[in-house]
Every structure is written in C-alpha cells, then in structure tokens.
Amino acid sequence: MLSDLDEHMIARYLRHRAKKQSIQRSDRAALKRWLSVLRDAGMIAPALSPVTPQDQIFAEFGDYLQRERGLASRTIINHLPTIRRFLCEVCPAGVKDLHKINHADVVRYVERHARDGSPGFGKGMCSSLRVFFRYLHHKGLNPLPLAGCVPSIRQWKLANLPTYLSAEQVQNVLDGCDRASAIGRRDYAILMMLAKLGLRANEVATLTLDDIDWRSGEMCIRAKGRQRVGMPIPPDVGAAVAAYLRDGRPKSSCRRLFLRTVTPRVGFASGGAITMIAKTALERAGIRGFARQGAHIFRHSLATALLRSGATLSEIGQLLRHKSYDTTRIYAKVDIDALDRSAHRTRAVSKHAPRAGIQVPGSGAPPARLRHLHGEAQGHDHHDEAGAGMGDLAIRSRRVGSQALDRRARFRATCRKHRSEDGGAAHRDLSTKEATEALYL
Image (spheres, rainbow, N blue to C red):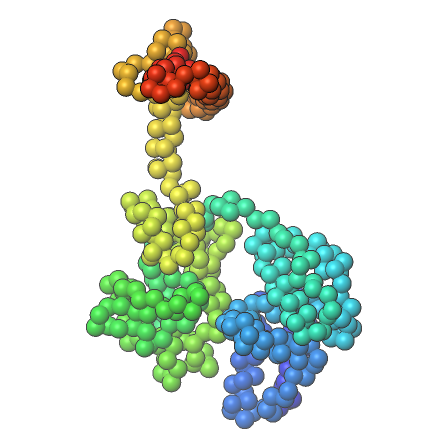
C-alpha cells in the first residue's frame, strides 16, 4: 500500500537494489524528494523523528556542520555516504559502539578502502572521516581525538592531463540533440551552457529565471564557495535558452530555469542530473573511452580551445572562476603547439648559446683563461639533441660553481692579508686590484 511507504521501506528497497546494481549518489536524494512530495500531497503519513539511532546521529551531525561550521547543504550531503559506509563496517552494532572506535580501526579501514577509487576519492574519504571524528570528540561520543590518526592520501599536483574534446566532437554532441522535442531543446540549452560558458553541473542546475537579465544580456551564476558571479550571455547560448523557454519549458510555479520533464515539474535535485544529461549526449554522439564522461569534460574542452586560440592562462582562469592560478596552469600541459615551440627554443639554446661562465665586468670578451667556460675553446662539441645539450650545460654549470667558490675563497684570503698589512686608500686600491684577479683570473 502506498500509505505504508516511509523511510524504512526506502532503506529496504535500497539494500535490495544494491545486491543487483550500484547505488548512485543521487538515488537517495531522489527518493527522499519523492517522499516529501507524497507527504505534501497528504498521500502518506507525516515524517516522524529520525527512526534509527544512526539517523539521529546524522541529523545532529548535519546540524552541527551547518550551524557551527557554516557548511553548505550540498557539502554536508557529500560527507554522509562515506560516514554511513564507515559506521556499517566498523560499528555494525550501532551508535552505542561509537566510543569503542580506536586508532587501529580507523587506520585499517582507510587501508582497505583507499584504493577503491581515484586518489581524489581517497582524499575525499579521509576528509569526511576527519570531519566526523572531530564531531564525535567535540560531543564527547568518543574520548579519543581520532581525526589526527587518519592517514593522508598522496596525490601529486598537476600529475594528470585534463580530459577534453576537440571542437568537432563538441559540435557533434550539440548536433545530436533533437531540437524538435521539448526535452531536446532543454538538453541543447544545457549543453550550450556547458560548452560555451564552461559552467559546472551544479551551477547549471541551480540557475533560476530571476538570474537572467535579458536587457543587459547577463546572468548571475551561483558559483562554488557561495559566490555569485555575473557572466555575459553569448548570442547562441541566449537563443538556445529562449527557444527552450518559449517551446520546451513546462508550466510550473518553480522558478528554476531547467525543469524535469516528468512530474513533479520542479528543478533538478542536484548537478548529478546535468551530468547524466551530458553523459547521455556523449554516448549518443558515439564518444566513448574517456576516463570521465560527464559535464566537466566540456569545461576542460573550452579551456583547451581558448588556450590554443591564443588566450592567456589568467584570462582562462577568470572565465572559469578559478581561485588559484595552479588550477588553471594544468591546461598548459595540453597546449601542444606551445610545448613544441618551447622544445625547439630549448634545442636551439643548447646548440648555439654560449656556455655558462663568469666574465670580467666591463670587458668585451672573456679572458683567455675563462674561454673554455664559454665554449670558445677549440674542438668544442655541440649537441644536436636538447636533452644532451642541457645535460652538458648542467655539468659545466656545476664546474663553474665549484670554481667560483674557489675564487671567493681566494678573494676573502686576499682581503684578510691586506687588512692586516696595509690600511687607507692603498689598502682599498690594492685589495680591489687583487680581488679582481682573484675573482676573474
């Protein structure tokens, strides 16, 4: 009976489904929204207080993060799956065993699951566990400061290459949308925002009708970190959105820009729906084999295309709203033309540039005794390959550095000698003359 539907039945359904296929991150949110709609319609009983001790812990934990840590609801939701898996594995007896969790339990759990996904997944798991352990210690539910014993997952910065599509592939994805249908016009407008503006999935999902100013041709984006950023609307993106609003968007009191095509006619629960729309469009265009096939690949593709067309990294970072320059710098690794030019310059420098050395200030050419440091000696070999040339240059630079240290030692010895024997101007003239000889000859 529909009237018997509640959180207990949803939990039973998810456990049954997990035996046959994986549970997506958005499944719980979708089912929770479904229960909320049914309760608003009076078709099922009102929600009771948290029905299990674990639900009670999650409710109090979420309230703590929101009130005392100031975290956004989306961030809190992202923490819960990791904590739920940890409690099911480490505390099968329930919340009453929270005080029994020790350092060894935490380390063993991280060691077992650190390789379940990418290094980024491992870092996120450890971060969620630390947040939860700080809460347990703060509330007195566990006497040990377990947050400090969570191992760190090593992830090298700028180690990976961004996944991107060519301009032709992006156009094929856009052309694959059936703009004769309402859902096709909606998906086309969403993909245009992803491909032409580089918006994140959640930024597209949270757009509202009030965020668009058609007179000025701008829209307000709810970016990461609770920022609100104004962005211009390109003509092709504006035309796609206008076509959806005229002939595709269903009638609804919801102010979200993009709505579901099935009831309830409300906005998407999260950016996961935008990611699924992008993934479906990529598969429809026959694009497969990428490590990440979702909404973010369009963001990488836009940045790569802009860099190859001559845009600077600072301009790209400003468009993509990056807080750190290092986040944008990774795109320099896919600018093949710039890398090729840099390699040619390095090869030319190693082949034709003089070797590193020390030259007497004010003289036109290095002294004869230093010419071997500048590559002017007879029989000097030039390397054709950049790697060999740079390696030879490094060896010679180390030799120069060693000789420079000997010169500085002779210079200090000369100064000490004349400081003890002479004084005044004669001392300064003599020491300067001999110091020059000690440094450069």
